Image (tube, rainbow, N blue to C red; front, top):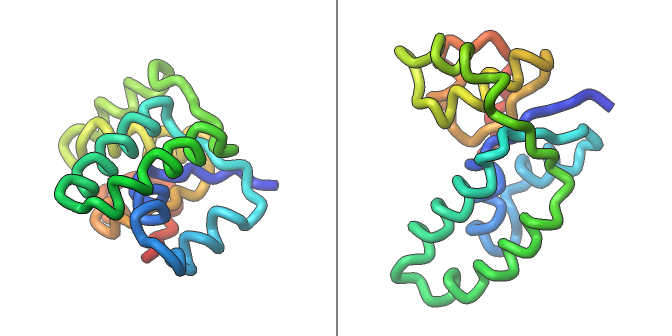
Amino acid sequence: MSPAVVDASVLTAFYVAGAPRPPQAVRRLSAGHALFAPARFDAEIVSALRGVAEGNAVLAEAVPGALRHLAGSSVRRVPVAPLMERMWGLRHNITACDAAYVALAEQWDADLITCDAKLAGSGGRCRFDVVE
C-alpha cells in the first residue's frame, strides 16, 4: 500500500457535497492507500466548513457529523516541524499551509491528492492527483 498525502480541500469537498459524494474523491479516499496529512489538516477543514456553513442551515446541521467522521478518519496526521525548511523554500509559489502538503508528499515520494488545480502548478516536486 503506497502512501498518499491528502489535502484539506478533498475532505472539505467530500463533506459539503451532500449525496452523492464527488466520485473522484470517493475513489481516491478508498483506493487502499495509507493516507497522511500535516497535523494542521483538521483545523483547516473545520475552518473551511465554518465558512461554507455560514448562512446554510442544512449544512450547518450536518457539520457535527462531518467532524465526528473527521476525528475518526484513518488519515494519519504528521508533525509540521520536520517540513518547515522545505515549506520555507516554497514560499514564493504557495502559502505555508499548502506548502506543508507539498513538502510532506515530496518527503515521502507520495502522490498529493487535492482539489486545487492551481496547487499542481506550484513548482512542487511531487506527483499531483487533482480530483474534482
